[in-house]
Length: 250
Ligand code: UDP
Image (tube, rainbow, N blue to C red; front, top):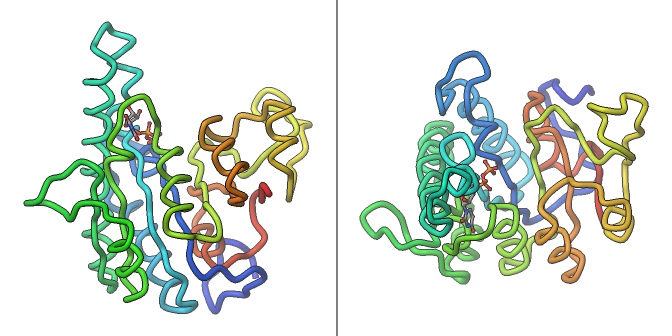
């Protein structure tokens, strides 16, 4: 079965609980300047719902906000960095609500938990509550990063994965790069993709697959990361099912 096909999932490495990191930019339209592409959000939501339905995998999503705002952009224009980062964290809440809507329409209950309190919109992030929602079969969407500036959402994705005792951090990329390569494949087309690699090698070779803070956190806490291409239809389902796609960092 090819990665983009439907049908029953073959499982090679079944996960029971995962954190899925979805970059905000993955949700944007490639064809227009829309910050959120409803068709893309729907497609990703239905893959998540399919995998949860078929495999019972517990899924907590950490969503980014780069399609709307990145703290470094404002800071580069002279804004106060903490203010600009707070705008970025609020951007992730917009994406979380879009995902919530799409996942619920596709048939699964969800809860959005935010690291910045906004009681009228979502629940506050409380570790034990997040675990309880997962145990009840709800998809948990974690928004507003860590609630602190000077981070990107890669680091709260790693932190939350450790906190809720997820087995793996599934890091979906949107840049067209489908794993970890021996060199930047856009500059060096001859570069090889690793199916597995150690954290030590990623650090020594300075392979920038995600933020260094997140990588060192995962290394210290023995939390594997699967790097895969979020944009290829079928890949979210296959990553959630534990199929051998992308690169596993251990
Ligand atoms: N952000 C932050 N603290 C966090 C997580 C995110 O300050 O714990 C801000 C930061 O400015 C970041 C923005 O939120 O640029 C959006 O997140 P990110 O860049 O990770 O989005 P993605 O690249 O995943 O779309």
